[in-house]
Image (cartoon, rainbow, N blue to C red; front, side, top):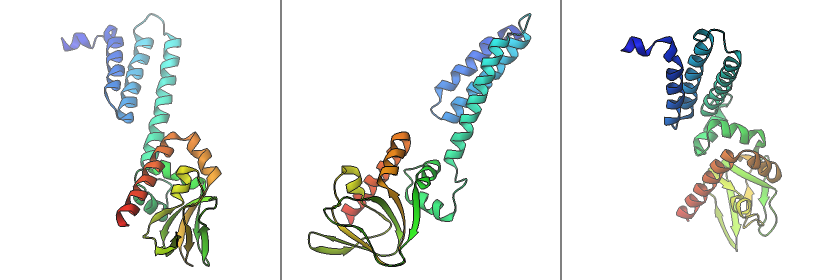
Length: 216
């Protein structure tokens, strides 16, 4: 019976079964991998079984193989730390709601900086030009007459960024403080182009605010 199933005329059924079984998996690599295997069996069928090779079917099956292979490569790259240096890997460890690939995209529109002197990042009641993530150093927050140190690492300007309102506090960085900054306009354009980055960054911002509330 097994030999009968492997008869070359049944290849098209085997190909379809493998192809469709891919859609039983949520994992994109498994899904696309099985689609590739199914397309390979289709190519064999279109070339071997019929009297004359069906070049149209072969062409589109090969196109499907290539597209899915490229997408698998992109998914693997997005899940790995390839291209991230030590600081960037540490940043991903803190912003683990984002994949390594999404962190790479964020950093393309961001800048690593070290404060050489005291810097006023934001002033209460004034529009904010940048979203900032402070990695280490010293940050002082002044709000409604109160003054306190901000526990790090932490975002600065996340409320203004999410609500599109002026800064809710005055924030100062001490010399030597290390941080990443994103210009608001460039960051918003990236998030419009990349919904997954928007979702991941939103989750990171929400967790950061929750941690600040818990500490308060």
